[in-house]
Length: 594
Figure 1 (cartoon, rainbow, N blue to C red):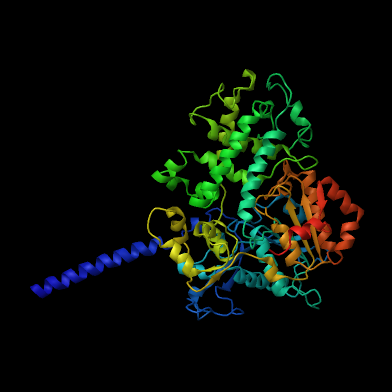
Figure 2 (cartoon, rainbow, N blue to C red; figure 1 turned 90 degrees about the vertical axis):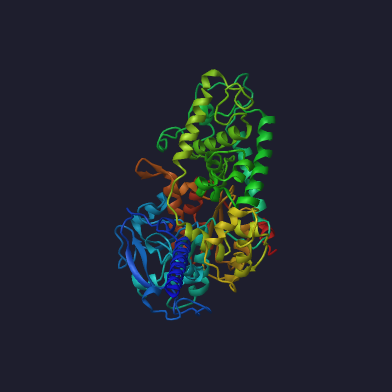
């Protein structure tokens, strides 16, 4: 009888342990949603690939020492533009690599400029491994296969599948995608190769994280951009702040008159004049914003993380106390401000961008000044200078509605975390760890497993990632993958994401003189919004011009100097308010290796 009881007790203990392990296992898995796998995705073509590329060394402790084991294979999903025909030699073959990391882009949601290129050329999109339709096993131990070098090998397999012996005429990449394109060019880009794999690169918003204080430069530019927005959209000298017409704004925005760009009702209106804002109040807001950004970075990583996890943080007492119950609208407005650039004289200033910038400015200003954040005070410190006809509280409510509608968007959280950390692009994890250079997976695990309440949110996010203890993690430096491929760099002059000489560093240290070109579009942010503008169902004249500029470079990439001197190219640069910084001595000075 005693023996039977002992057996039952052991079985019960084992059952509890099994249940505990099962619960722990489920917490260690990424869900389909967290990988950005949608139910209504367009159906892509698939290529069966190894998680562990055969051409790369197998790391110690790899789950896939047998690279051909069934659970070590995955379906790599890709998409071909309409009319795709590689047999027509007049059509350029262009691969697009999205940013993020974690952005999921295909033929259903590409930019207006890409849609323009699709009309004349073959454009290829794909979901990077671990994202969207290229999702892999959700167990976080499989995170060890989400690395830039592995994705480079996937892209080469994709080229062989689609183009056979022909090269990519261009790889067009944005943000994090530029790190993949740079590595691919260093691995496969040999200009003198009789059978080249790639002919040229077009890199938009190229990042470089090897400098220590790029995050500080980003934060400073965010505040400066808000100051510019306050000043640009605010008429001066009026006795009273009236909201009777858009005449003031027409002189500031290039597409407010016919043909105006209709963008789901976000055209500028008379109430978009920030004339009510006093200089002393603006200064107060900017100072408070700088403090808030520093507090966010130190304790919660970034505004992006807060927006993505707001439902959880809304229940966190420390978070609510620290930020005095600021709503998600505030953090979403800050996130938008980080991406959207700022209006500058002789730069691209569009109607839709302006409306959204003013939305963000109004929300940030309101939440940092209001005594009661749930109520609009038309006679208070912020809005007291506005005339009654401005109906400023209705305008604030519209800003909330429009900002809330823009919060969504599909991405892969797994891709963002894993690629972001291990590719050295993400700043939030190293910043919270206090790391300014290279570190290892052991350091990552040590931070994640610290006890106490300090930075608990950041530690919880790091725990989501599969950690390889002995793997070295270094800030991304394109100079480590220097190559000679003809390359066009494009950035917005008010891009906070690449602030701190990042594109200049990329240009100076990562590319060969004579085969490189650097264009800066005045006023735009990291989203390079000219490439997203549409007029009804058609691309706008600016998007068409932008697409034409990319096409010109790809066709003339063998001689970048000829591209720069061509009259047709110069006309496009003028239309797009572009500064050619290729020979600018300040680029080399800014981009010296630190």
